[in-house]
Image (cartoon, rainbow, N blue to C red):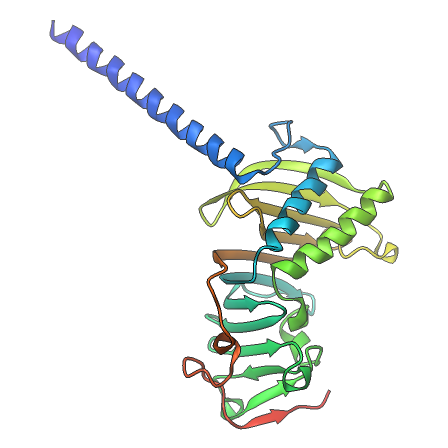
Length: 277
């Protein structure tokens, strides 16, 4: 009798676990459908249609058109002077038409701040260091100043999800028209505890053709539809860039104060010196 009771309990426990698993699966499926994303029909890693990948990009662009501003913690690694930099965490604020505030949160650049507002300060990037003599001044530099490329591969005007979509979208559509785009479905994965659809795009391994890279792996967030992770490889299939947007908040209502070096929450010096170059 005791054995029968124990067996009954085990069966009931198994049924409850199965129901819970089914409920979780249904909830996850509903989240995917609600996001409106096109999950490739293959259901496994493998070749998927170019049209599906382009539709993912189109959905991301449509969603991004609704975004006026956002904040995020950007995790970034780049290959500079032949070596991968350590991953850096950067507090990022972005507003339209093009305003950026950045604060490096760890690593050798910890404490550095930067602000760029298109059309302001003679279109210069304001940079404030926290170490050495440089901490006493705010440097006003060209977005393409050689100093910028000592620490990264891009000018500040390339920062953000919108620019990422523009670069990848233009290359993907051109490659699709030319019949040289290969798309691989890498399935549903997780980025920063968020479900994402991962898609890999492969372009010709020839830099003279004019594409930005040879391979790019994009992770599209189910909820926002936006690419929150991009991993980029050059023509020798070497990792050159890796960007992950975590703690992404869309349309939080940023104001001009968020992009003002006089903001008391920031540490910019009142002594501002333009640097040649």
